[in-house]
Amino acid sequence: MLGSSLKNLVIYSKDMVKLGKVTDFEINPDEMNVTHLILELEDQAAKEIFGKSPKLRHAKGRVAVLLIENLKDAIILKQSIKDLKDTIEKL
Image (cartoon, rainbow, N blue to C red):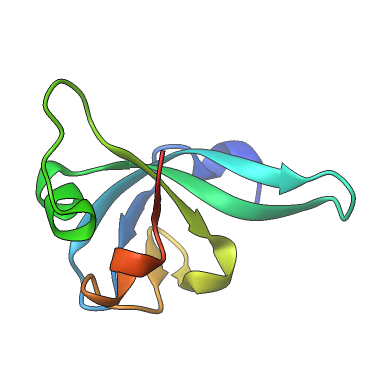
């Protein structure tokens, strides 16, 4: 899979709540692997995860690739949206 094919890929929680889409990813240059995905979160998902809705633009978050359960036409994470509150880092 090409890195460019990750861009704009939709991402869901384990309970199939649409979180948003991938806008970028982080690479560990020492090990040459992808470590995190950068997400543009849907307003409702941002409210559930961060406790508030963004005012002017979409909220961004960072999620470790270790949380990916399935990667095909979309990305499905291993955790439900309630469990993601402590695992998605606000950017």
